[in-house]
Image 1 (cartoon, rainbow, N blue to C red):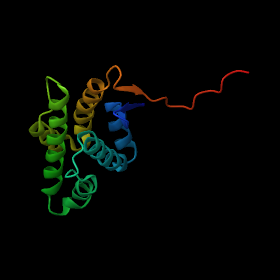
Image 2 (image 1 turned 120 degrees about the horizontal axis):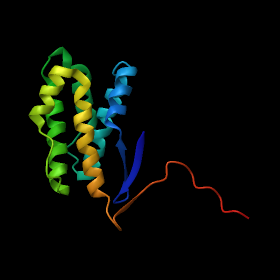
Image 3 (image 1 turned 90 degrees about the horizontal axis):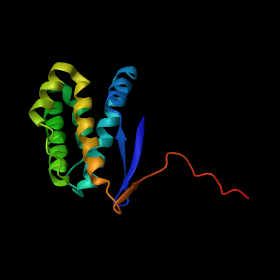
Length: 145
């Protein structure tokens, strides 16, 4: 369901967009919050931008609904960070933060597909010859003998 990639010595997950949505639905949105924290952390590490705070973004998502606006601002900022990451690695059609907000408003957690698809494009382009290699998802078997 998820492929672990190593880029510049850091591990990132290339997740199935439909898998993210499915898990969020099955777990009654609990996985959405886990996913949201993890993608913010991955973008922070990839961009080496310590101003991106996965915890602050997650708290805005969880508790911000009391004030209605904070989750939309947090999602917009996350989308802007993903868009900047896409631009940096050379993705031609980047994520549109405004569309992310529309999807969030209309489909609630349905914007996970859109964001994850764009993150997967970043990971695909960032993995290059000599720069990174996919990490095995299981331990290697011992040599025979």
